[in-house]
Image (cartoon, rainbow, N blue to C red; front, side):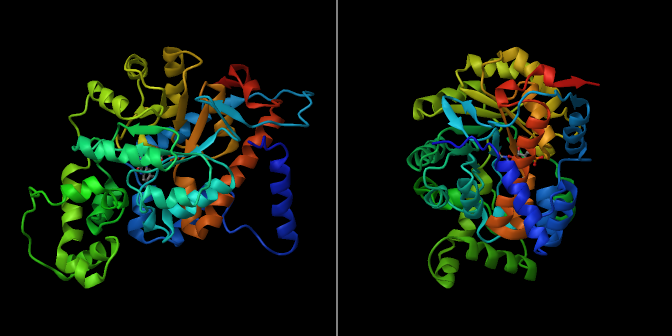
Length: 424
Ligand code: FNR
């Protein structure tokens, strides 16, 4: 049974003010800019660079945000908005809200409970959570904490098709409702802040839990690894090896270290994780291996959106990876209307990138997205206060969505349309 969330916003608003009356505030800042600044204080410099940063001069991050300023909501009055329904239908299922959690990898950088804390918070709100291929906890562990709450799996298509098939099979078994194939990370973007720090979390064995927990990957680790060039051992590299060993699952530290498997896991991962040779024709392999809906994440061009339909996928997520891949890229919101025109109003289109407030969500829905996803904001909540922080960040945004929708004169998501906004 899906709640329609009517009045959920008022209840949360009341909770915040009553807490304030008793001298307590939420753990997380409500303002998204302050939220980021607050989160920075609870993260290592490396973690903050990794989460907040983008590619090159970070102009895509800037573009994602500024695109929202080009549109303005035009509120309508006297519409009896006493009940408000934020539920949506997507791929034949009903969801309580038009908000999904984007897949974000390496969450252990900001909190030890990582994906599990996010899964629990999402489940408490019945909010769909897209598990990352680069998660810090295996999908089975996260799913076990989520009851029947909706979850999808995001796939990076590695060089091993056997591994791709194994990930997808595991996702099906742990109740994922769709496979999201991220297309925009065939190579790691030129990430200025990470390069300046000369820091990549994967080298410490972080963010590879889906791999080390996979039987096919364990087999692949026995194969010879190419390109493992010898380097001088330094104190720093020893510390890295210790981290790598700690992050490898199971066993006693020294037996893991002596087995050499933690290091092999990282080397193998680096060798196979991305596949720049991927083409549209490869998608049929996925279709043969799953009955789940397939969505493509990273679509930015109307022609690619049309191709997605031609190749039989079930939906798309307009995304530029939160500005982490192509610097100087067009924003996601800017491309939304042309893409919706290309695929037609009924094709399942989601978007992410720079969504920070309720008004952003209303604008994206008015331009034809069926729902939107957020990335960094919930990670900041996680960094500040774990599961509670994620819950509060999401609950704040949901309240903002419901109130902005009602105050704009819309009783339900279906009433949000092109007339709700204008372009300036
Ligand atoms: C991401 N994103 C991402 N996408 C994906 O498909 N798989 C992944 O593992 C990750 N990992 C990841 C890590 C970090 C630190 C960030 C910030 C982002 C991209 C993510 O799913 C989403 O597209 C963006 O985060 C959306 O933009 P905002 O909401 O962060 O502005």
